[in-house]
Image (cartoon, rainbow, N blue to C red; front, side):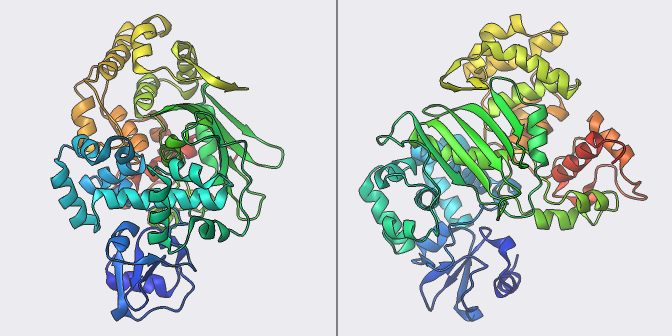
Length: 496
């Protein structure tokens, strides 16, 4: 978007762009979200920034009226496959908190100095400032959504000390943490005790912001693939949809439940996390948001998809479709390899058999007693648990062993090209697997799985597109969402 497109967006107070850029006003020294209800400033007094961190660096403070941090993130980090996009995915996952700037730079293949220069040029702020903004946003979410102790909020947000937390909140929001908490009209109830800073068993509940419309069909996608003991999906009598699972985080295991309540005002999407180390909360929040594609701009995506006559009907009946992400890149690769060329039901059966190799969780709850096996556990026990052609078993075991030894390292900091270089040389992995992993791990928005059997069946259900490309290039860069519509068309009952 150019300056005047952004200016028209803030003049219209268009909520679609909240979180996608920030408006800094020189005459007041504050920065706002695009939908801020305050009077539209004069164009000559405005500077637009890609990130809130860039506005902080330029000396601006957050608007107390519109609270620009209280919005979904930008989809740009999934759209972009450059260094800046890859870096932001890792920063949001807490890499700087765990490994420092040097660790982030190493993962991206640059020196810390080079990375600082690249991010400052591309995003207006260096990695430390971007990480600080991410911590401030996490802190604000916890302050207004829970009744956690302020010291617990500080450490859960990634700050090294309460003093650093107080200083940052004051610099960013021009308020004390207590004052930020008071901005909430009603704090969400705190579920259980957060314990001491760094406690291994914390529990909390908070709302996850997202852009409407939101298609709850993503719960169906996850439900039919749910591995018993590791995942659980339910539909309650009031229409509430839930998905729960266990997972490993940098400091230990945890479990979470996401509930979508369409009958409640505001249609909240609520996260309940249990048995989680407070230091792991930023990573958990980032991964849950990626799993449910909550930083997407569905209206813009739907507008683009609806220009294709093959998709216009599906978009009208299923607005706000999401591309499911992944909470564990290594797990997703194994699941993708097992799911190749077999039905979803058959893949679920195979994964259920394989799950026996995983460890038990330290704090089990009904239906959530197991962790998905690590690559090392799969390398040790997978061969005796997997069934099917030996060549296929050998391919899966080879990938597990490569990940266990570190010779294969994939994660949120990759891009589609690097995934191809890493995965295609491995036996049993072809373009479909690489594309599926890119779509779900990276959130790559422009993947079209042309060789997928369900996609071919979906094409038979949709209207014929005369003169249109078979790979849906007309709706690029949103072909991953076209893929989801085709999969949904295949799953839809014939009688409607």
